[in-house]
Amino acid sequence: MKITEINLSSSKSVIYCGVGAFEKYAKQLIGTNAFIVTDSNIYKIYAKLINETFVSTPVYVISAGEKSKNKKTLFNILQAMLEHNLDRDCCVVALGGGVVGDIAGFAASMFMRGVKLIQIPTTLLAQVDSSVGGKTAIDFYGVKNSVGAFYQPFAVIADSLFLKTLPVRELRCGLGEIVKYGALDKDIYNKLFENIKNFSDISFLQSIIFDCIAHKIEVVSADERDVNGVRKTLNAGHTTGHAFELFYGRKSHGEYVLIGMYYELLIAERRGICWGQYPENLKKLICAVVKKIPVYADINKAAILALHDKKNTEGLISIIVPVSEGRVEEVKLSFEEYVKELEYAAMEIQNSYEKS
Ligand code: NAD
Ligand code: GLY
Image (cartoon, rainbow, N blue to C red; front, side):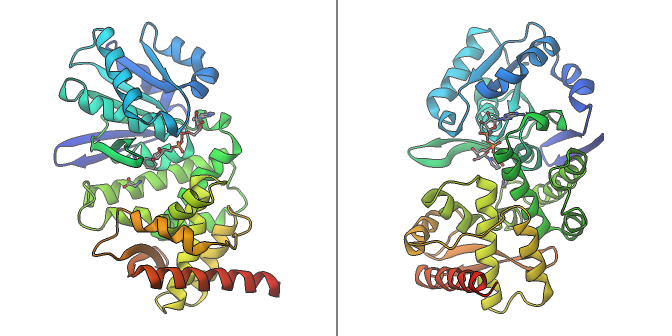
């Protein structure tokens, strides 16, 4: 198990990562004045573990899924905290995936103007990404993550114990984000290549989870509030991936991130900012998770959804593209240019299938 810290100007989070972290630290860190938030799927599997570890601690179970990340559930959580007479010394424990982490984290930031928060991420995506860095939110007025706060957890306990029960789709989702880290970090990239056959091996995942967290700590330390451009590198592949996810919506979020990255990589190649063996190698890594990159119809309609991307400025679409090992760059395109580029990319993918 590894322990690391994230030191920011007004907070410090300690991250406990690895097998045994839950057993060793959860009870001790959480104390006796806590409130656990989890979801219905997780509670079905882990009720015994939760109730035996945190005896007499109230557990609030939300319905599993993104649809729970709303204001009604948020205020239900806050109301339940008042009904349990919790005070400003209490600790909110977000035990779940990114949905639980985001909404319980936001509740912790609001209750009594902010109480202690501990994240216990149970999905691969939450372990490598959402539990670290303090972004909390709900979806509001039809806009994802439109209302929220930066609120750093006091501790994160990322234990691979929980990954054993994850559905394959959720594992692939997390792997998508892990391969994205490969585009941002040379060491992660090399390690992924060396282990391309071990992607679903829990002991490999455990070690790469820590590497991804370490990379995220560096990024968040440089740009906690997502204002100077460093943190938006974590969004590589996401502009196109998210548009495709919203429009075509069958695969997991992480797979769409990689499909988006593949299309954006082709754009970077066409524009001459990424060349040589590197893009070919990165494509192999992407295809180790997404077996076949789809060639989409109606790509011009899907592209409209990229117009709402939070990174866009001055009416231009922002994409964060891979350029060389461990390096990405922001490219800004007009909507018309973006659609053309996506159409070229789709054609290129189609041609490659016809040749093979
Ligand atoms: P999720 O929380 O919905 O979990 C995915 C599914 O796995 C759910 O059905 C859940 O019940 C189930 N599950 C969770 N842990 C399990 C376990 N150990 N065993 C079996 N089933 C389990 O989804 P997610 O992918 O973890 O998170 C997605 C959310 O995270 C989105 O709302 C997204 O906006 C948010 N997010 C936030 C950040 C951030 O920085 N705050 C970053 C990325 C994503
Ligand atoms: N998941 C992106 C971020 O934390 O900024």
